[in-house]
Image (tube, rainbow, N blue to C red; front, side, top):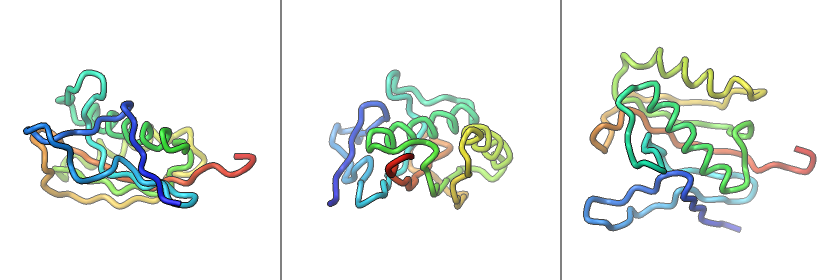
Length: 137
C-alpha cells in the first residue's frame, strides 16, 4: 500500500502565486517512509533563521516531524541526503547533525552534496528515508 503523508508540524511551502508544488511531504510504502526535501522554514512563524546552525537544526526538526506524522521516529531514520549551499559550512553541519542524532543507537547513512539551492535564504535542505517501527520497537 502506498500512502501520502502530510503534517502541519512541518512546512509545506507553496509557490509565490499560492499554488502548491507538485510533490508530497512524504510517501509511506510498505515499512519505509520517503520524505521530500525539508528546508529551514519554521512551521509556526514561517521564518527562516539567518544562522546556518539554526537552519540545520530546523531542517532536522522538520524532517523528524514528517517522519513522526507517518508513524516513524528519529531513531528509525536510515538515510539522509543533505544539500548544503557552501562547502565552508560542512564542519558546522557535521557538528549540528551529530548532536541531533546523538541519542540514536545508529547514525543514518548519509550523502552530502554542495549545490545551489532553489529558495532565497535557504542554506541547507535534507530529504530522508525512515523505517516504520516493528513489533517490540
